[in-house]
Image (cartoon, rainbow, N blue to C red):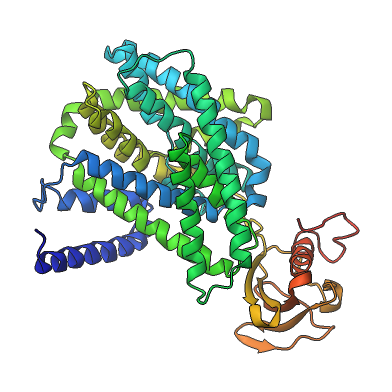
Length: 495
């Protein structure tokens, strides 16, 4: 039985670990290391090899890992801008499907001959190692400034490829014979998962826009709850819960939600909490004393994956899109691994597959090595390939707050660097009748704008609009943001 004192100690240790992990983000930024390594290190220090906390429950680790992945995918989808990833949609889909098949086949074939693994186990290794990690990709790529096409493709890949990889791992870890219907099952699970995500995303967005919740803080909670329900619905309907979660989050994140900025901040904080908890947990579960025993197979698998399987899968999946070789090279080196492969490696271990313990140790060691090698060299590679775009334009930020009793809404607009709203006179903004800019905040000072007021970068605008023209007002702001004062003449609608 858990005593009150035990709960107190657990809460204190958990809060201390969380605080240290938050500080570690700053330290990792200065050192140029991905923060997930420090989280894993904290878990290892707490584990049996150092502080002596023994934790070897694979079932609990996998369950908590799946829950954390759902929250990480939720954060990734909510904070992904559709306009930024739309040009890379089909490339991202190809990387998350075709590239996965190629990577599994190439890695599995190579490991069958090089390590003497039987075909099913070799392909299982390939499947586990083929998944890129959403948390690693989201945390590293968004600060590189390599341009929307590459960032969008890699974000979509990391958000979408968990679903097919999970299905492949479950099929290969099962003792049942794989029949010819397996590809049809995969197609059904992915298609149904995507459909569930779209449906719940649109229904959730419509419901939140119409709900008059008594507190601002309830909107972010409800948004995350819809995404978690999408996972549950997908799993219960034997579809891909991971895909349903990411798609629902992507739809909600790009819907016109009330208090959208609060929702984004809450989702980002929840994503960080899930990442920290997951990596500390996996570090706690790991046994460093066994890692030297798997050094050779891990080295072989890492070399095959990094220099053969990943580049070949990128080349083949990007053929229809005529991706330049420099971008292909960057995509090949950006297959960041993180917690996802470790969590997926626990599936065959729980099911009692022979040799699964070795796979878990190999994956853990590879995650550490590849994260250090790839994560720390990505900025250098991006610069050497000439892919860093200085002053990358960011889309205008628009947050909405409903005024239910007045039948109106407030739109808070932040003019980003590179926006074509810069230099536009207030009279040229031409908002629809029923919407007006009531306040401008510039350099910390507020004032009521006049028709001759000229907008500037970093200005914050407060727009009061009736419910009837709220959508039209936002579309007009976004249109001017993209095309300037002559947006309509240029055919820009802001959709």
